Length: 177
Image 1: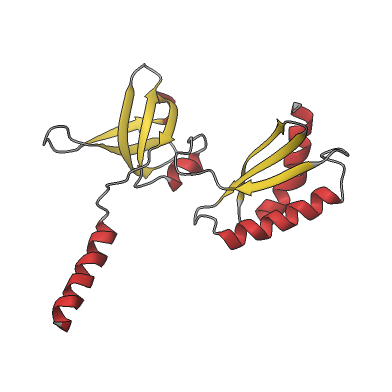
Image 2: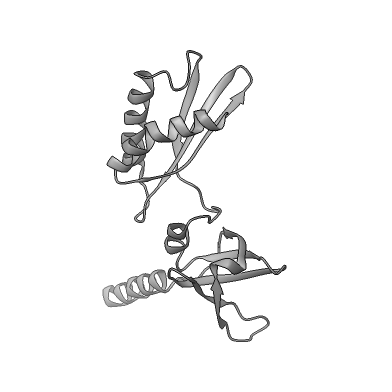
């Protein structure tokens, strides 16, 4: 896809996405055999549920149908969210990833896996998990020290909120007995 087509698509679609309360994160046109696929990635600070995705998909489809931005050939429109292991590239991505475990590639070389505690205009306060029974340590990362960052999927995280909810459920079960 040429840069001019990408820019035209962004100019055309971003106002519609923004009007739905979402951010336009990425636009990609891929060829799959003889068909083309237009992938539009959207997100927001509060996330994007299926209803919002469906609404923005209908609005984008209607807008694309009334213009020639994709040319005359067939294409498939796919609208979705960034996914669990998203790459963090904008300040808003770091803010949205607060509380999440992230693998950082540092500009000085090396990697760091840490949980984002807070994000401000200059950088991040993170918590580096302890190793072999040691306590976690706090660290400050400036955005200039980060060359790449990706959210990590956690399957066994003990979240305080879920622990509180399960404790309340256990209390309720005991009261019923």
